[in-house]
Picture: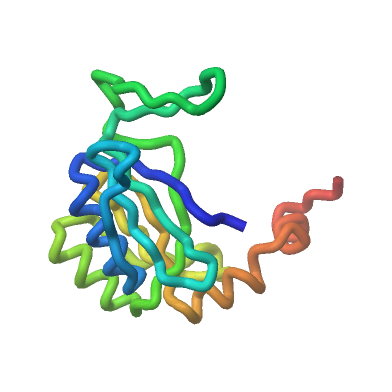
Length: 153
């Protein structure tokens, strides 16, 4: 179960505001980390997404994780997030258009549909409205993936 995650952004405050809008939640500064913001979903788990300035890298250190600035970070990422939204596909696409961010509705192999929502045209969020979240939970399971890909072990 995922409770929170973090993503990079050039403008963390603005990105947190947009993500809070997608969730119909709220945003606020993440005071322990200057320049970082949090978007809160308002769901029963308190799901939260932290938006850090691009290039702030976390690395292990004795006692607690340490953050350092990478002077030349990639504008893209090795990872993405799939997350639910209370908005419809159309409402998500309107927000992307307003922001000037790439977005498109996609079918993920008949299992579920998403909007590929490119935050600042650099970080991928796969957004699922309520009905697609239900399809995801039913169709994306270890058993389903074993069958789909012929995995026997």
